[in-house]
Length: 505
Image 1 (cartoon, helix red, strand yellow):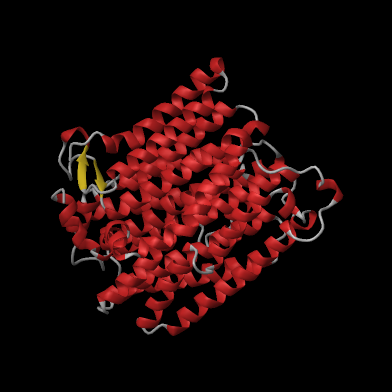
Image 2 (image 1 turned 90 degrees about the horizontal axis):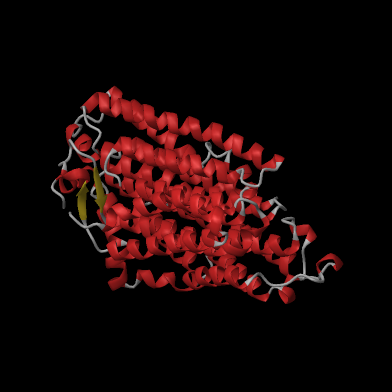
């Protein structure tokens, strides 16, 4: 593959991250323009390369010797999701980040984080996956602490410590995989270990990958950093952390390694199902009692990631046990679709929380009330996002949850379907509380002068709210075959995927 577009997905944010601090010191608001221009260009490029399938060879060196970047259904979907949320977040940042200093440094760190996530989605090499993972992680540590207050610094430090442990475990997993095969190219490793996945070294590598990427994904029991980090970060960064970072560095990377490199066994599938169920249940019940709006959303991130892991894990378990491929594909479809849906509605919820905090100066639901009249647009978009995350039709979250439920029933796991429905009901209760205390009831005297969010912040929220309403159309057969089915196929092919990657598809 010779297209110049794939390298630009990493080169543009890296270049802009270094140029913005240099230029913005002299030209002031140029940081806003360059930051938004960069993320918009990345979104356009991600859409342009979406139909492409191929292997981009860095420097013309053929794998497994050289470094390769892979474009397939799953990586392309991840690229669109990452850059879509990034574009909305930077637009929201123009007025929102005025309350912070050093805006040029903010955009620089933001674009480094985006470059790392794009690199993780693109790379076909395990060590480069680690490098890009670290670029995104280190930038996110700094962004969580960007306000410089005690709460933010403490949350960032906890995130840094646990994130570093996760990165170290991933690096150990890569070392064991290299020791067993002599390769770092994912497809070459997969080909070399075919038929000997029971090797103790490879089992140990799988364990390290599962725990390391599990920490990055913030699934239970590896979640303690998330409830502090997400509320402490500026709202656009909270949207990025929950919307795309824990997916790109966590679930996507874990799925890619386990399904396409090491191979999913019944034990690995069962572990993913258990982790998914535990995350769903623990996250949602911890969220119910929260009164800090952003902290409530943070716990729901843990719960919703459980849906994604459950869908993908159930599909892998069915395949590993020799079950019906149709049921496995349906479960994976639900997991992949919910990954995309969650990116949109959870990012929107964090932007809504940022809009409310920007206007009222508080995140505490008990200190709000009556905002429906003062902030009608925020109320509307927050309601749409709340219904989406709760799985209320016709919004996008309903369709992906329904698919997971149907897949569980078809596979003979009715108890999983029952748990999924229960968690959705508790989620609905939780967000009815949010809507009741934030927007209904009398308006407190202290909030009499509250106004709607600035126009650019509102545009970002409206854009994501529209997507929540229309993303169910991705299940229309013609659209699904173009957008979702290729991503599911990349996972369901398992280790057979390696042959296509080595041959350049």
